[in-house]
Length: 334
Image 1 (cartoon, rainbow, N blue to C red):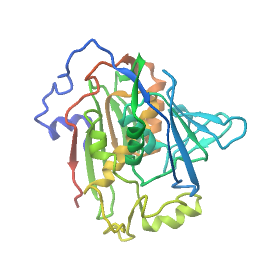
Image 2: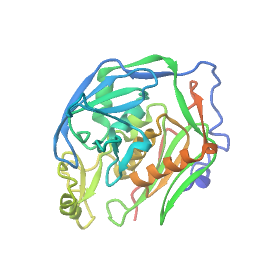
Image 3: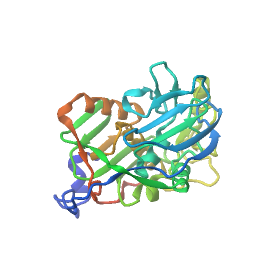
């Protein structure tokens, strides 16, 4: 597995100052929101419920929030924030103080991060974000159709000032100081169709959209019955997930994979969504090895528990840029 100390070994052409070569510019980047409201309807991956969701513009500094419009009294307002996460079993779920939830928010949050949306109000008439095709691409399309506008306030970011790491057996998640914003993820599954895969993504230059936004969630054929017995996966199908055969040798979807290493790309997508629950983009390097929603959230909790590990800064053009845009470090291999 790769750790932050071996990134330069994997990319010797970057040089030790790769994260320092940034253009200087005094102009701050402005906050962004949607130009107009836009709606979609789909099925919840775990609940199986039919859900309608509307993405709306929001005021400066309001952040991302969900509003459960199906509830009496004007609807519950639930912040998309790391401290509101209440469940990380095969999804990221947030709740308000009364226990009202919105589940499976990670793909939408990844799309909002990829499109640099700071402020949005999301009306939803059920307890779960619709899964759509299992990736972030449909949400990116919605945002592009709605349009994006800049707002009259500087965009803020969370700059990582010292390394923070969470370990759980052979898994870990870590944030390290860096001038850019990068995500490195590696996975290792016994299934022959997955095996060991890694990728490195820079959150700038459109790499999120072009390289990982279409990567779909995945699961194993033999897990379906157990998931449904636990009240999960009721809306899952070959239309919204990559399903791996019980022998691990192939995927059951007729169209196959969208990328050869779609599995690790989706894990990177999940990490981008989970990390955007920080409340602002991160300036730093994330590395997750066999990580998931639980470890990602625990990492944010540890980060914000240590005020010496981060600081808020105003973004300037180029701040989030960091080479390379996207690289598969390890393709699927035995």
